[in-house]
Amino acid sequence: MIPKELEHLDLNYFSHGKRSKIYTYTENGKMFAVKIEDDKIKNKGRIENEVKFLNILNKQNIGSRVLHAGKKYFIYEFVEGSLILDFIEKSKNPFPVLKNILRQCQVLDELKINKLEMHHPMKHIFIKKKKVVLIDFERCYFTEKPKNVTQFCQFLIRSKKLSLNKEKIIAAVKEYKKENSEKNFKKVLACLI
Image 1 (cartoon, helix red, strand yellow):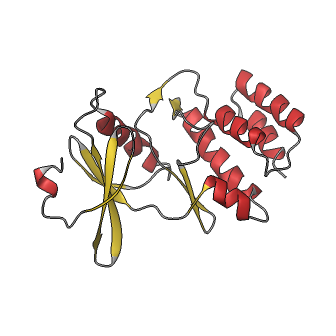
Image 2 (cartoon, rainbow, N blue to C red; image 1 turned 90 degrees about the vertical axis):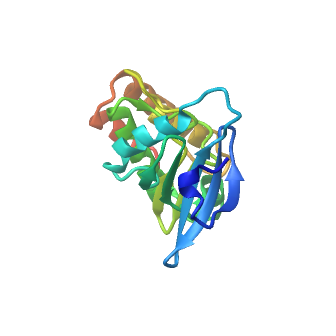
């Protein structure tokens, strides 16, 4: 159900997930999206959780930019681009962008935030002209042992479209997992060439 404070907007249904529906609208030639919590879900408060983490991450230039939020919804800049698998498939050299994604994962790790789903991010990463936007932070939580870099590396290792030295990246990720340091992170990045 669309909250009353959004009824003045000319909303168009765009898509839905397990916990929310997304609508779009255009204002001054620019497209915006509205994510609204589904009334039928059992786990309430996912939108509030996502807004909380996006407010932290937007300061690090991570995630879609939150423009306005209510209790069960938020408005953000519409994210366009190719999804990660399409990008990898079509790109002649995906490694600079993949390193950008890993760098964002490292920032999440440093902030002790676990995003979840980074081992299976098919619908969570958009790329447009080398600009990367991660979406869907509703299940984020703070933890002493975040796994964003390691999970994204698992995804890369499983990709049949990337030629990686799997043993080398696994060894680098194990070191990073033991000690989340810049030195160890650079060893992970060095595997993507």
